[in-house]
Image (cartoon, rainbow, N blue to C red; front, side, top):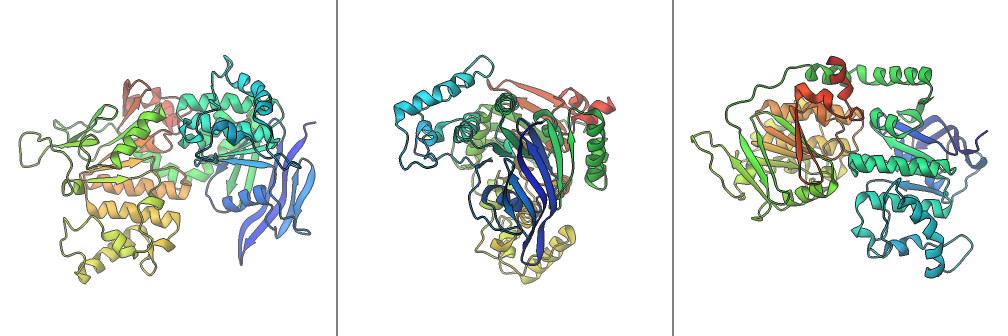
Length: 507
């Protein structure tokens, strides 16, 4: 019988009067890769705090390697030997990879000598650099110079060398290309075969099915069910439960929209976008959604950086077809012209909200080109407030923007873009980190923006729900080669990609 690495037994936690975890039970054994499908993020941070830091529990018990480390009877405030790896690297910048691996060992007050540590790491590095993985970790390189896959694997290696029997990975697919995800899957299985256990947290079941041996549904602060993915009967029950979660709203809405025919192409595109950094050229029609999926993270990062400095001559060109002219007129972006382009950044709730300003002032940004009196006209601002509440169902105007939740901040940014009425919106991984509820709201808001005639360009590494909005998908490889898929050919996309099963069933 396999050793139990982690067991949560009816764990309940509270924050004030609010229950965060509600009789949450979960069992993870050595050598397993358990996928946690987060239907929503409610209680997820509390779960991670319990696993990492042994925060107090209101009821229940927590066992690690078959020893009780936390319970409602006794508090044990200590850091557990568990590693969390997410989209933000835990490696120390300014230090080499080797220095990041040379950590303090329990019971010792000084670092292991570099020569001895090099000898210790050699077998691990040889494993990774074998024909099976072909993954080279440059020990002398600064940690910030590693590519995303090297960074994630280095953090796994550090956990293994520390003897952490449980390694948690959260939303890693937003960092890695499909090819890198395949390599990571092999690395995870390799260390699982050596007795380590993994908890893989994701918002998409297709991803969990390709990465994990077991799966659990996490919803509203509790684990609703678990299943062995190698057991056909259990997998069928899990599929039915997941369908039930989506069928009430999101799946029905999305599948209805996806059932439509391909958009007829207009004779003239609305605009052509050129990025010198890649190079890249994409034409968009009015109200069309095109998804660019980057199979290599480097060109994706180049384009996102270029969009962050739109006034530079070598960044991005927007070649609009003027409505009052018969020919396209190419112009460099300038401050006024940029009002026609809206960018939704990858971490928009953190980077596109000004927390010290009011919600209304955040909403009105980028609208003075259309409404010059917006900052002084109270009647106009009152009308905007009414429209905002009508569309979102939220009245958030009594607070500063810094008090908004992530979901509220995301809605505010999309509503700002909707009221800006740009010619094109460029969104970088818009569904990153969003649970089912927020994904559905994002999907509807992007749909409203498109209904106004705005063309939408989605930039992504992980497709997430981008396929549900796309009229075309362009997959860009490492050498800038590309392959374009129109809606009728979406069934030819990889089966691990979320929502492709819908098109394969139709075909």
